[in-house]
Image 1: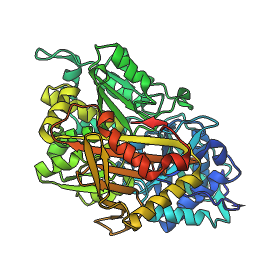
Image 2: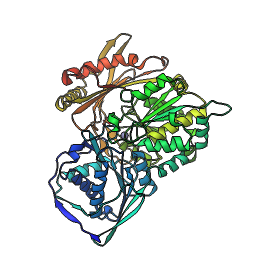
Image 3: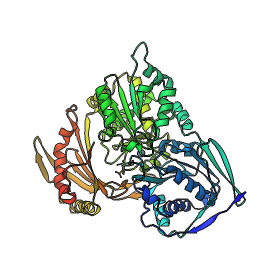
Image 4: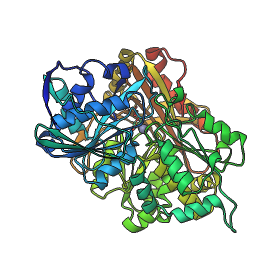
Length: 561
Ligand code: G1P
Ligand code: ZN
């Protein structure tokens, strides 16, 4: 039976502007009449003629509305002459797995259904993001094109009679007005597992976990926070690396993530912190976010390692990972707000090092041009050029490889690193769900201070140290590869001593505004102090300069990292 393409008239929505990482809104917004359909049609149209005969991967993190969205995508893709969709079983793929599949099977791209670390459920968030043929999030030019098409869309094409079964692995073929359209449902984990086995030395990792004559068994606790990584963790850590039941937790993926905020940080992942504090038998903890691209790493007794430091430690030890032995190490990169610990390693190793705007998409060109091999963000994102997304499980396996290779604990690795390089103390204050207008006014106020250079040379005496402003600007990035320019990427106040304050508004929220305030303070010798103490003076300066309390009415941040 041949299925028919229908053309459905629609009216544009004005708010389909992708943020730092795709379009994120409340589920109820995506459920509005034609809302999801419009956006999918705009994504396909932004690809022009290339969409005809193409293959795309589709998958998401298991959150509420996933299966409905996959069904809509299949119907619209078929109508727009896409040849084939590769879909994870039950619609499930982690973000890193999607990136890998695009690259491995040389696809035109993929549609990722996730709002990452944002809560899920009928009253929470959903998200749609397009990744290009390099496996990475679409660059600004593409997302702007999608947005501009979404503002003038008049109709979309759909095959309403096309129904895909998401649960059975295998190929399903459809005849759409004489053209073949295929949907292949594949195992969500297999390709990713095989790739991890290629990248890392699984035999060595197995020995680390099991223990040997030289070393007792190494006890890990891997927390999937009810997100998508559950099945990956079961397969990789339990079935392949030999971990036991007590080494993994919350591996059942739930559409509302069990009511938790699936963001692996000290505030939202207290459960893991508590378990490691209570049970000294654990040597290592790792947690991943809803879609599996973020990671938080902990040592014994929940010793916290910042993503800035884990990036730098990995950079300093990449030779112990077979992938880098084989492919070499090109250079490193970090997003601008990320503390500069990795810069010092780059200097020692004499490799290139880049500072990019916030968002993984800015690393893509550098990786494609073989300029960087490893990169990271302070927001619990770490990854390499093995794919074009950050990768939580990869980060945990990479850190375990360093532990295996050096024979050191997490804490020893950190403290030895600080002794060699000094320590970049770092903190981030998040003020979530503020009213939008006053936050924009605050940014305007800061922009004026930067434009008029009013703060340059100004000294702020604090107990112990006087901080003098050396530079203040709004970060602007010229992509070294395609020369594209990203403006207004965050206000930076840089002091004579190298300490920094950064202020920007989040681009991933689904409603309201979130202010992010970052503080960094480098010390060469005093490396074992409390980060909050070391950063208190510059946070106080930041609060004074930004007038944050006046603008937002907030006394305290919602999250401190
Ligand atoms: C946040 C993080 C950023 C990360 C992004 C997607 O974006 O700060 O580093 O790339 O989530 O995971 P923001 O909300 O700050 O725009
Ligand atoms: Zn994520």
